[in-house]
Image (cartoon, rainbow, N blue to C red):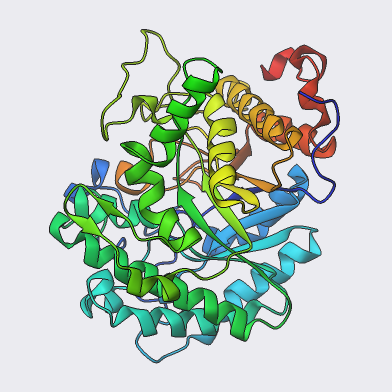
Length: 452
């Protein structure tokens, strides 16, 4: 790895989503989302996102923590039902919440990146058919227009959707996420409507933006790590990452139409049509990649490997192998030739304060350093990487898994609301201050033993 740091304008940041941190589910004119009404039996311990991290009330404290950590950017999502609590109605209180957040971030030197939809569909939209009805396309377009007109004089970075591959597949293929209904025969219809809505949203962002903007999609993605770095093994890994098996389900299904305007057929139950490609394939400024674990151990398709005994995993059982960062970035860039933003990358664990009152998370420290070193390898090879948004800024509501999996750089006591920056937050601050140059040094020279 080269000794130079990351690009001078690199967006070092962290991510969150409205449903996972905000709370205030019935405050300020907001109406419920599909996650607010999730049946207790569908979420572990019967937990809900009604309070979450109480970011709705404590957001100034959270921005102060970001500033203290030295973050240069913060990727957050907007709650659709906070902005539009019913059809045709714009909520000024909701607009003010996000407008004040953006102003405070900018005053703290933190660049806002806005995700317009991160899984929390308003209940009123769902009752009109949700992603199963083309009625959602103009509704999503109107919501996009409202939030872009409100914030784009200050917000340059826009992500219309986060991980359609998750919010469609988890909800309608597996039935494990809201709205918890299995209908795999509708996957073509669901995918088409979702992609058309995204295309219209991209056009809407560009039409109503009050300054030059950057627009991208955040994909749930992964890569197959080659067994050896030989031309043959790399080509096999590329095929498994981008074309077949997991690569078809996790990458090509969504990326080919959205990024390349190419229809896709899969598994005899899904096909996209050439006639839709002109609407779906809208020019993007970057591709957002949410990277966690290799495809080598994933359930979809052939070639699944069993991890060796003792293989490191996070608390959700996902294998930790930092090489997937490099190969994922490389394979996606080589195929689509768009600048890359790491829109999510992180590790869940069962973190808790120690007797000294601090939260020591050496496993996450190692994860952070390892994955960033692999990202630097991609940058050193000339791949344009715009930024890194760690998932997540705070421990939060992890969807159907409830509150046990903790991804945050900051520990949250979900009873008192107290925030405690973890050791990983301090290490990340050192990385940011050096613009990544410390990553090329021996860990022992810059990470104190007490943090490792």
